[in-house]
Image (cartoon, rainbow, N blue to C red; front, side, top):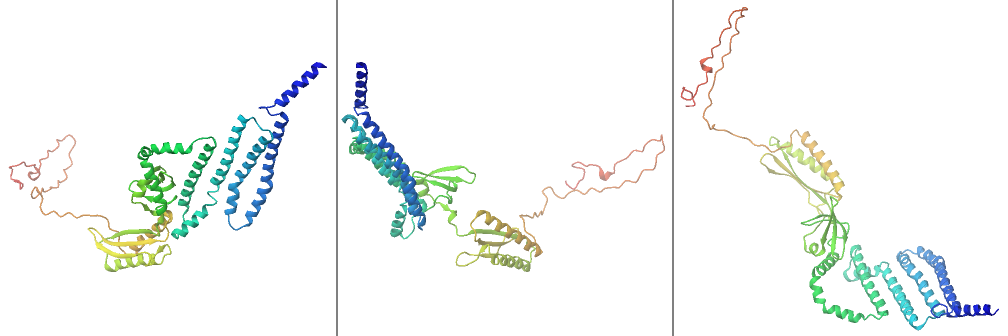
Length: 414
């Protein structure tokens, strides 16, 4: 009986000592409270957030849907942090351990706050768009908006990291002061980075191009895939990816084909010199009727210039200039329109009774370099009489006119 009492006494000591000096019943209660908050998080998601989601779907705007979607995970994380906080209040730890747990809770709270702000950058970007419109009278644009969101998120991440480090007694002011001592060296080493960053801002603010545009510079031509802080990625038409520093693109002459209002067709059509005036007029009038009567071409004189005229007398052709614009800017559609126009012009030239000219040249020879050529008469041979078998074959003697005469034999070349 005495041994049983001693064993029970040991159980009581272990129970009272618990974990880190906290009684086991307090530990169990703390765990129970944490589990309750985890259950409440699931209930909050299933009931409150689902109810708010149904309300936001009834509104005309999508901003409230994006805000709710962005805040969903941070709100769920609040229950996790609250569960830890209240569990530690039920089961207080020793002073040395409690100091670290307090810092952990404060760090989690700071993380939750800045995480929520970070995720709210996209839904609240419409405010930035309205402010930009009020200042400049035009929309911010998707590309510049995305760039501004990335900058804002980087700033929030840096401030949030600084706030968490402050909770762990890091002297942020001293760190920034130390950075200031090497600021000049860093700025000198990062001058290209700074130039590219400002180059990206120039591209966005001036709207030189945006992602998806077809551009051409002196060095590269292709489709813009991504505009980053330092570089712009351009996908060439052979599917090669080119990375160009933003500072180069900001200073270079950039042709933006995606901003074309129309696509141009500029041909010089050459016909033969034997073409009569009436035939030339038929071809020119036929081309003009086709272009002005086809909906694929833009012929409004206030928007484009359409020129179809006999242009010049070329070295081997009479040239007709065709200068017109299509309504489409799509490359594939432009090729189809151009092909149809080519077929029609070929038919017009053939129906007019003329032909297309091709490069040719004429050679006139006044004198030969070796004098007048010698005329050699050719004497036709008479058929030889039939020879009897066994009789000798007659010998042939060349005509004096056919004998090859060398120099000095009285030839005209002397």
